[in-house]
Length: 138
Length: 138
Length: 138
Length: 138
Image (cartoon, rainbow over all chains, first blue to last red; front, top):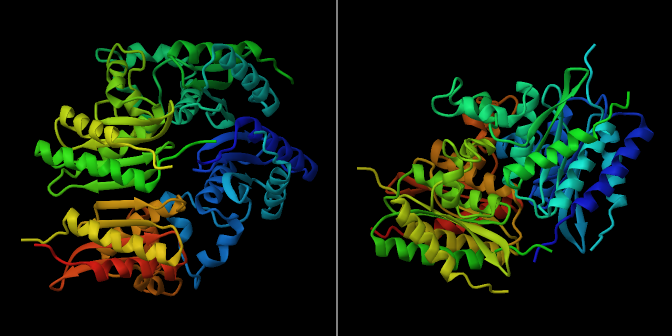
């Protein structure tokens, strides 16, 4: 049995991410996927960078597919790292800077979030706000 | 000046599409793009088909990119049609069956909607509900 | 809660598909995916056509993503059909001839099978043998 | 005459890789290709990371295509290396961290193995177990 996020849960998460981005004053692209990295919900805030649309979605994909926050992948993917070049694998969908987090429930990855368009710290803050707002509705 | 849909407008449209899909009893993938075919908002309803995630987004892309409802492209794209094979152009992003519509304001395309996951008639009905709900907020 | 095939179940399915292919005397490519179309198990029988490696995987993907057997998609995707051009959507992963089937349990799609490399009837027979062998182990 | 792995040999290899992964207590994606880098057999163990499905296949592809273990490619692909950027060539299919090995017979590459989903050392250990289990059946 695999647990998956529902659309209602994804909306709650996106609302919190959007609210945080507004608080930070930076327009972001916001994405939520299920545990297999497929998109459940997406929002591009007014004025958010186009490049960040794809990056937000791929941050969430990466977090689901690797089962780790994306910022934890950076060190290993860099020159000298254990998995140097990780970000160019999997058809270029792997993002190795911060802003993607798996969503866990009872210790199991049930989906993922990704934010992009601001400084990495802002992207991470918005995603974290989404995680904090997650409440299993089932 | 080019007018574009805002995220707030996209949400109103998506709410109406989702409501219609619930009324029809069929879980859909729902997409709204800006006038350049780039995604503004997306929702995959619980139980909606995975294949329709990509198709909903590409229906909206197509409607924005061609500035026509997708069902109007079918005849021309078929054997014997003026633009036979249209759907295999543009990196396969062009969809030539119903469910995608441009969103117009003052005679100008300001974005597009796409729905996928049901019968074509259901997809079209959901997208139409989105169009009907569109109210320029600016 | 989403139910998913396990690798053990996928192997049982692949064994039955392979046995049927041997019985038919035609080397096939055989694929099993989870409900989101991601590959769980794959086998290319000795002498099986290379082209059919991708097709078997995409038949299974399609059956999972559309939640229907692939042969049921053919009529609609043909000229004059409701969803003409369906097979060129979703990055060309949609296959509209026979050989892909969703695997269902308690009325829910928990995965999919795909076979390719023989006549369509042979591909379908092998996939059907896989379905028949499916026994939930949990 | 070119020698190639058979499906039966690939299964023996995959069995040994899977057994090693279970022993290590880490769910992996496991792939075997022929000497041309095309997939012969694949298994995604229960709970194995999605990203590693593609990476395991591409590790095996790389090992077959380069005729070297993937960990030997790392140094050259890094900044300052002879073939800096190697991993971004060949449509991003080249992986330059450990876990892929060519399978050799009589000094000739007859196929390749790839494992992904654990630490690089675990991936390498599982692949090595597969190599050790290889016995030409012809």
